[in-house]
Amino acid sequence: MEGHVRKRGAKWYYSFEAANVDGKRKRIERVGGRTKKEAEAALRKAIEEYENTGLHFEPTETSVADYMDYWFKNYVEVNCKYNTKTSYEGIIRNHIKPSLGIYKLKSLTPAILQEFVNNKYLTGLSKNHLTNIMAVLNGSLKYAVHPCEFIKTNPMQYVKYPKYEHSKTDIDHKVITDNELEKILERFPPETPYYMPIMIGYYTGCRIGEVMGLTWEDIDLEKEIICIDKILYKRKPNWYLGSTKTESSVRSIKIGKTLVVALRQHKKLQMENRLKYGQHFIQQYETEEIDEKTNEKIRRIHSLSVSVDTKMQPINMVCTKESGEIVTPDTFKYASRVIHYSLGILFNFHSLRHTHATLLIENGANIKDVQKRLGHSRIETTLNTYTHQTESMSNETVDIFEKVAKKKDGLPTKAK
Image (tube, rainbow, N blue to C red; front, side, top):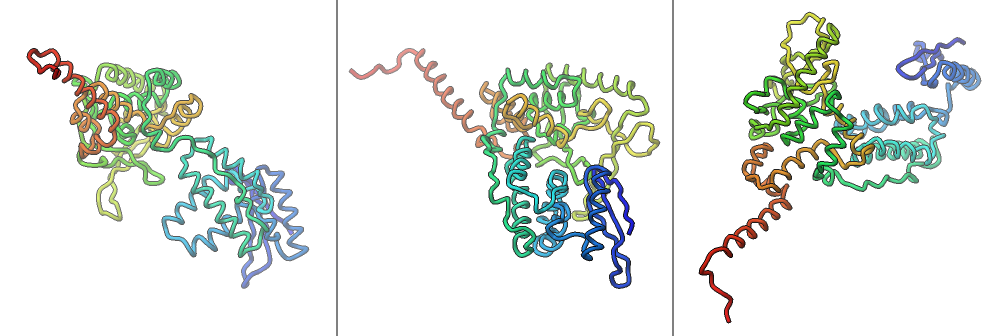
């Protein structure tokens, strides 16, 4: 009996022809390892076992990758709703298979799984995301114990959740100090793709989708105004320009000299990079599509080399990499992880928005102006979010009145 090995992605697969089933020849293909040599060895073993027993392998010899496919087909597909299926499929494909797929199911130990979980934690995954990954592992391995009886015990029962010192709310409400901002900008200077998003976020308080969705047509450097009327968002696997969070999120924001200078320098750098890359420079274009669910028109972004002849409408994005490729909320996650873990600064993009608003309120800005600048639809949202700052302002207001009142003559004196 002959077999074959081939490489798919980062892995090598082996395959061979098994016996006829219902008059049709059945082909068996499995992951053989990370190298051709490993796949060839796995092929020889699989053929030997098949010819000796009639089976290509015992259930306990199956890989984690194959078992996850088995569990998804026999349990998830049958028992779970659409959104759960989609979520589980993404977790299996993006996290479990790449790291654990090559292990034999019976070889998974609490130590291997704990290391996997710890590594995911260290890459900066949110608590909710890591919890979902661990739930998929626990549920699938529990099913392997019963009813499948592929393994005797579930090794996930011994795996501990990493301790998250800070909640998402803690990070969202983090105020970046001057010293911390200096460290961040030293790590991501103007020639890096993350400098401009950080500067815009810090100096305008805009949301990440609003910042990444900016085009140069939205910015008037002479009048020193940025217009927010759209966001960049993802519909897997493509990126789109869409409407803002609420109608009140459509706004014009006055910007200061610091950001204007940074934007002028960035625009100049973009032009230099366009000349440097020539025909290999990436240009963004947009096309109009119809949303099948809402029947609304949506704007899809296409990133193509300028050498490509197209009639699509070009758009000039502000936040781009050296090659012209767009910076997205997904790619910015790298910068967030570096700031959070390498620089040791509690951080996500929303920290910039919170810092901007906090500094304004603490330094006496009108709360109504802050509301408009942030794009909050209701002033209560601004007041509730920055309760501590507005309470501080209230106390300062009382102190101011007290000082003024004491300067006035003719005030009643203390009763004798």
